[in-house]
Length: 299
Image (cartoon, rainbow, N blue to C red; front, top):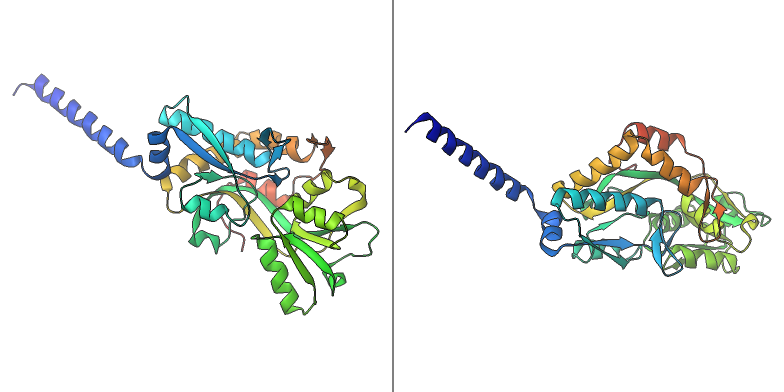
């Protein structure tokens, strides 16, 4: 066999091997998206300013913007410029089940990455770090957790805040009457209407609910943080290729500074629907995260 023919066969073999490897690498969610031409996002109704519905028309928010950057990267990688983006409303209670059963492919909202959830799903690099606190009426006389003894306190069902609140109630024998609602909007309505004296949730979400209140200045966020929590985009467990794409996008936004612009847009400037400013400065935890992107749970 002459040298030219041998070289040709070797090149052909290399191409076939490369194609086989590429085909082999496309698995899990990426394969599902490639086959269907659709990516399905789990979206929240009232996780202001992370991911929320604006007037029944469209989704907006800090986490949603990050999710759309991930969608664009998937379009490029899979060479699907006309990739269809489908959005399905989810709640704190059903988000994990809908991801596991394939109804949604990714959820970027306000979901905490913790060790318990890591048994069921995987998380991308962290997109936000919060503390869990309470929102109360400014003139209501409640300054910290001990002031909640024997009182009605609301939180959102299926959240880490609900778990923490119930544990605190049992451990400290506070005798609180804990009310759980389906979403953050309903929880704040319970507080605003006087059915509860405090609303426990992640501090950034509390500021988001405050921003859409009838009279935002009536409400303050108080109490020593009961936990530090890391939000990540939630994906199916052990789907390394899909996680890799998502992590590259998130780390890229942090390394090139784009994330700072996104943060300012949603936390330091007026946000819809009422054009109110959450005025939630970048924390030291967030500054450290932007310098060193990671997917670590904080519990």
